Image (tube, rainbow, N blue to C red; front, side):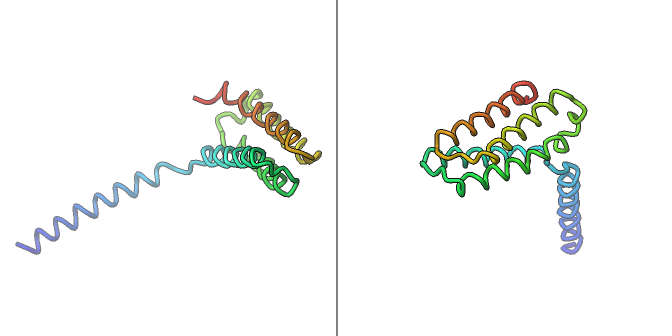
Length: 132
């Protein structure tokens, strides 16, 4: 009898584990959220650097480079919007803002703030239209 009860408990635990594993696998990757999270964290880090008066090129260039590289993944991260011309324009504006910041490295915190404002403006424009 004890063996039968252990068998039933094992069967139940195994079935519950299998259901949880299948549910986890069916969710798929959250590539879109990952791209947005990286962009957001890099912009927060830039803002923190500006507020702490750490606006040297060595402080900001890595952030701008990461923003620029990740901005290349905006369209693939949102496959439903890849054919949307307006979304493409917003993604291009973000890339252009990052390019401007990289080409003319901010010399002081005021210039860095202007670059961050341009990046933030391009993000806000897209979020107003597409974010739920």
